[in-house]
Length: 113
Length: 113
View: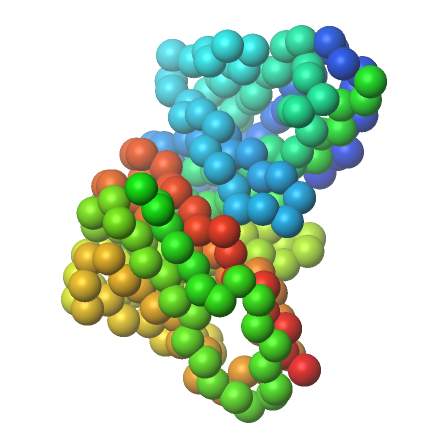
């Protein structure tokens, strides 16, 4: 099983739609979880952290299920500007207590007018 | 604040040449790391550092060296460039590593011919 797995997509959705991405991770000892956004030919940028209790930031909601080792990202009322690749990220096995971050390969979202 | 600055943005090398990719951050982050991103492979960790004078290997360290003489700088050295090292290289830094997410530089696009 790969350390972090995501559906590569692409997800093609109309403006205003609600879209959900899922991610699974293999290391049950992982303690930190994030969603990053990466625009074409740009660097990844932190979208939001994912907490055990779930968290929401405007139109974005992240959920964590430790028992199933599963993370989700929900985007409501999609905008054209949401078009990007979304990277699921967990802390991995390098770095001892620091726990380097392991990146999924990303899920591509394309929001159409 | 400049954040994380990478130079150069683009580079073409001949096989066997050596070069250093520069990375500097002005956020007083202790934690810095280098990733490479290849199509279909996602981001893979090359080397990381948890503070000045401390470095360690990540997932794909072969062919690369790093040093961390100051908190601000974390250069990546390619010892003898090979076509397999053609990639986009990202430097990232973090306040305390896993719990706070990373800030990425804008990347270096390297082609080895």
